[in-house]
Image (cartoon, rainbow, N blue to C red; front, side):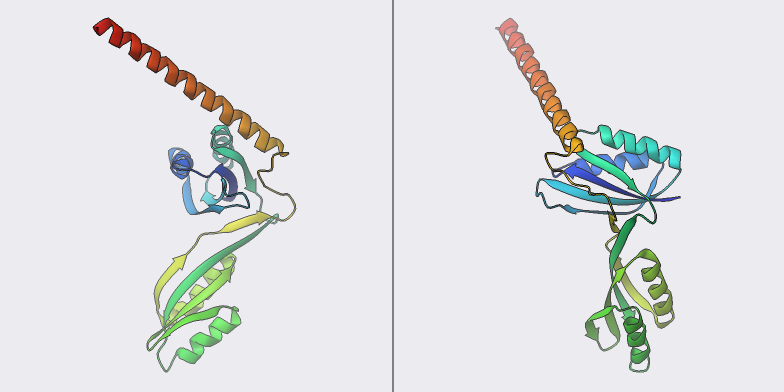
Amino acid sequence: MKHTISALVENHFGVLARIAGLFSARGFNIDSLAVGETEDPTVSRMTIVAQGDDRVLDQIIKQLDKLVDVIKVIDLKPGQLIERELVLIKARATSETRSDVMQIVNTFRAKIVDVSPDSLTIEVTGGESKVDAMLELLRPFGILEVVRTGSIAISRKSVLNAHSNDPASKNFKDRRVGARRKTDKEGKEKLRQSGEGRRKLD
C-alpha cells in the first residue's frame, strides 16, 4: 500500500541519512523523497512516499518519532491531503509533430519552458495521476528526458509546524536538551578518564 509521510526535522547534517536508513532496514522502498526548509529556517519538512505493509509502517513512524532530530511525523491519509509534483519533460517534437505535442501541453495546462529544433522542454505540475497520464500521451512522440521532484503534500485540515506552543515541539526540545546533556556528561567522563590515564603514565 502507498503511504505519504510528512516529517518535521531539525535542519542539520545527517538527519536525512538516518531517516532513510530506518526505511531501508525495514524493507520499505522509498518511491520519492522531497525535503526543504519550512517557515522556520532551523526546521526542514520531509515528504516521503513509500510502499509497504501498514503494520511495518506504524513501527517505522514510532521509531522516527523517537529520533532526537525528529520534531513530529504523521502519515497523511488519502483524501485528506493536497499533493503536488513538479516534472520537467524533454519530448521529441519535429516540424510534423510539434503542433500535436503542444496540444497535449495545453490540454494538461502545462508550460513549454524551452524550445529546440527537434524537441520541447515541458513543465507540468500536478498529482501523480495527471503526470502519469501526460507522460503516457507523450510517449509515442518520444520522451528524451524526465526529471521529477517527487511529491510534496500538505494536510487539508490539520497544521504541522514547530511553533513553541505545539506539544510536539515541546517534546522535541525536551528530548534535544536531554540528549545534549547526556552527550556533555559522556564527554566530561571521557575527559576525566583521559586525565587519569595521563597522570598514571606520568
